[in-house]
Image (cartoon, rainbow, N blue to C red; front, side, top):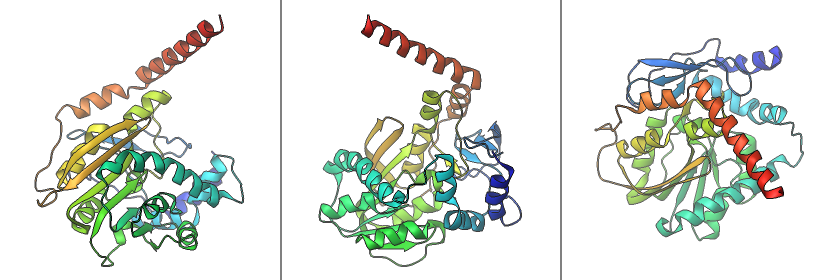
Length: 311
């Protein structure tokens, strides 16, 4: 990691980082998981000792993240992924549409026809699929370049962090968040907004990294600066239930948890669901030595299977 890369991104921190408590259970009792993210930034990630939620602490301010998404996000990721393709936004749209097809096809038995709002809608690839199904669509996306691309391709998009979004909208049949929940600075506020934004019986549809499983697959703890929060399968479902939704379908597909949940007429977060043993389970699972051993054993099995196939 070049020092100028680090300095560039952290110039968006509004001069200082901010401490934060657990966004879910509101407790301020956590243990450090690691102190460097997957790109090499010296980011401290912690796990809540009560509910098991994983988050960056301290982190950039809201203003810092806003500037980060406006000015540096895609450019920084392109640099790390060695991608300078001038058609990057076209590819982003196409890939989102391809990945979204899996989510939409899986969730199709539970989809309702009507206004569908996606938070973190990027270039509009997923919403394009909902539009093809006959839905009115609307995106909310903080990156202006991606929002403008979506608009050019017929996907109306508001430019904003959801934490700052106060514009009144018609009530929706579906609220979608795909691969974006990790990016939010206040998931609790988002879930409350989603509950209020849905019609009675409306559906919440999510596609979210199972962070714990991803670390097991990759053999190391892989936090990243643009993921202020990270979820296990249990912490994700607990969040959804506590926000006033009843899960009606869920499935893990590779590194992601797919969930469809129906709005219930209850006040969000009046009751908090959590598993008392989740902190211990996750902390034990994410032990660096155990992750490395699991990864090496997995690689050895792949080599052994390949050898048997060639024999």
